Length: 399
Image 1: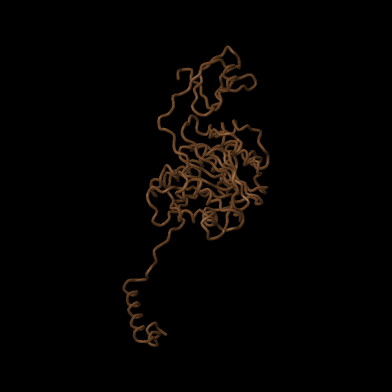
Image 2: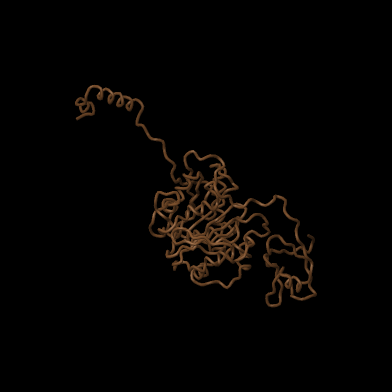
């Protein structure tokens, strides 16, 4: 039976309306609803030395100057999987910000992990780190996001890669959230990287901080705010890694390693505050994964599954801590006029005594830069210039 034959059984008025609709469809072609925003692959975003894929999400009607969140997936996951299950899409739509989700592959790493432990990928201006920086630059130029409100987060190897970006590009990221990740430069080889998962490293907060500061020597600008998320039953990446991350980023931000306050949150979660710049969230009873809390309430998000653990919506609390909901504003930038440099000329022995340098087997090395200064004694003298918190460089030719 044809479409016209079928209409003969319909009352005259309804038949007439149907014929008009049919005629309009014939003349105008099929009516396609407006396309909703989707996660979109982006090519040509830069030289891409890390061989990563870029995916972007721009909510419909996003205003110019909106924030940007970069979200790294974990090992064996994809950008689409993290976008779908982590809850970030919900808050991008609700609070009006854009998303960039980098994706690695088995061609880069057999387990599809980001190579947070490789020197060529964990360093400023190189490899995967530079590829992600190029993604941010592309979003700033083509989506119109605010270059001063860029944030980064990720799970597991993606969490470790978050720490890489915070250390290597503190001038790019306003804040970061490391979920079940690793402190920056815990390892510089694959073998050492595996050991970092289960063996506590014998480093002081100062040494952890020096590693992060060394990713961008001489940088004296604002440092990102950092939050650290860990399940208390994480046996994939041991929970002491939360403490090593805390030690690193409290030292970088110039605050102590004892909490200045604590707060109980839903999902058996306790938040520890370290000044205004570092937070540690300990989620009782969960293992290795991104904390989510499926549901329709504003503070609920995500889909529970493998490595997405039903407990608390981490994306909600992370986004609020960054001020993405319009309520809380991260610390403001310091004055644009840099302070005058601090220079000290003294013997190597005095530099070590006063904490500007350190001794290794009778030889002196400048703190932060690790520049060799000769024998540790009162006869060899040098001028050191301070370029950052506990970061000193040789300045014998003048300050």
